[in-house]
Image (tube, rainbow, N blue to C red; front, side):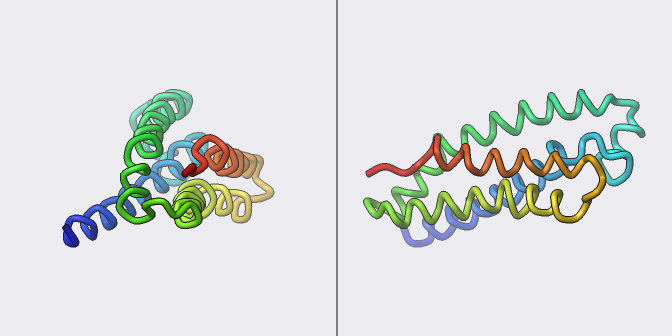
Length: 137
């Protein structure tokens, strides 16, 4: 069982790290003229709106699975009835997903470009997730 817990723990954070980058690329940079996402949309002749809408729909679906199905398993394996540990897991997960990989990076590094405002989506998502998925006993 110990090996399975370690595997789950590694897989969980691997998933969070990958979602973090998907959010950074699709949500925050769909309309960028340069960079990977900008080159992809121009190279394939796709509208940035298509990438933004379809990509974010898939990201929202994946995040709903993560927060509704996977996070409770993580709580059961690592936090049992400890609400403080559950909050720590939720805070670290949400911080990585919405602030570290997206919100803070976009707001701090691309200002004064008008696209810095996309970083505010990360802050709103962070706060929303804390309220919607707050740990209970």
